[in-house]
Amino acid sequence: MEKPLIRIERLATLTPRQFDDLCDLLVDAVESGASVGFLSPISRATASEYWHGVEAAIALDLVLFAAEVEGKVVGSVQLVPCPKENGQHRAEIQKLFVLRGHQGRGMATQLMQAAEQAAASMGRTLLVLDTHEGSLADAMYPGWGWQRAGAIPDYAAGPDGSLHPTVYYYKRIAPETG
Image 1 (cartoon, rainbow, N blue to C red):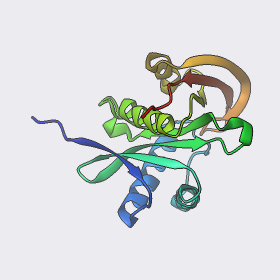
Image 2: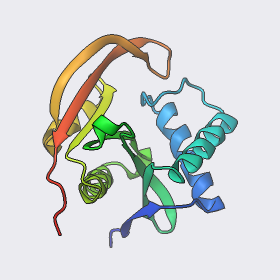
Image 3: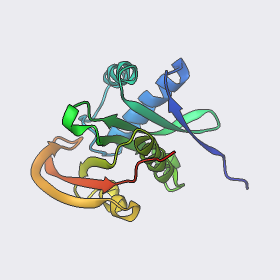
Image 4: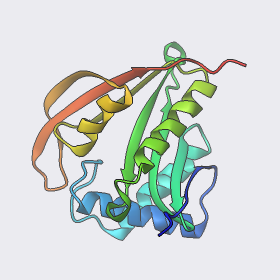
């Protein structure tokens, strides 16, 4: 059986279908226990409001990548360049998630590679991110070359409302030359 083709795309605008898929993706992430800033159960209205905000931020400076399989968005990640004058060398990775039914196929790796390449093309040389200590993501980042900077206890509430430590990571990247 042939594996479905995974397409990583930078989204400059969201079609209605992509918007709906992204809402499904956020609901799935929260309902699966991912600590991505929302409590469970998350309503469709809350997911929609969140993605409207992301869509508005794309017009400013946020970079959104989507992983699509057979025309459906099944994963995404965001790259947020630091807007501060003294932070023009860095950016933050946010909201990396893949639908539960599509995990384990390398999409998260491909999404992170796309975000890192975009950061390099923008001249960014330092990336930062945070995640729930002990999560699947926490276990994955070191394998992608990210360095653990430290943890803050009781920093964020998980989807069930319980407080947990948040781990901060950084990665130095080479700027794109050319």
